[in-house]
Length: 194
Ligand SMILES: CC(C)(COP(=O)(O)OP(=O)(O)OC[C@H]1O[C@@H](n2cnc3c(N)ncnc32)[C@H](O)[C@@H]1OP(=O)(O)O)[C@@H](O)C(=O)NCCC(=O)NCCS
Image (cartoon, rainbow, N blue to C red):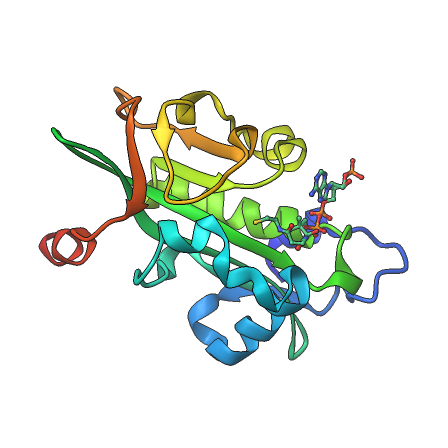
């Protein structure tokens, strides 16, 4: 079992069995299973959310997307996507994090923290130096260092509660303070060139 998950899982009466839990790349999970989990966590009407517009037509980033398994059962997922903040002068690439989702009956047992810790480990190892997400600051600021300060001047392609538009930026020089957050159409060519 991944050590970060072992640390994060509590030994209480969870339906999740910590001894069987493991974190794996999301590429190992059938996409239809991920969709069912997301429906369970967010409801089937989730596709209209602003976050979906920010990553419209983008592929998820395999190096930053993971699943939590209890045996063969999918308990949680985290995904990340190529995005950018753009204005008339250019664009700064940024990674959109989310959704983070845990099966309703397994929430509050440390699975969300473990998935985020795994993503942040990969990010800090070089996979992403700037990340943005829409989420509860009471969770993502408190535990993971995301804040709304850097996003205050960004436009988004849909409604958002500003205090829930959160960023975690480790890039030298930061990102432009104003611009439109959206999909990164140059992602494929930049990845091919890397
Ligand atoms: C939000 C979510 C991913 C958290 O994962 P989890 O496995 O349930 O949470 P963890 O066990 O890792 O963390 C539990 C701690 O986080 C807190 N917490 C969990 N969700 C929270 C939220 N939305 N706001 C504030 N605090 C939250 C709990 O109170 C608990 O705090 P404590 O350690 O002081 O007791 C999960 O509950 C979920 O899938 N919710 C529905 C979908 C969603 O809202 N996703 C987030 C938006 S992308």
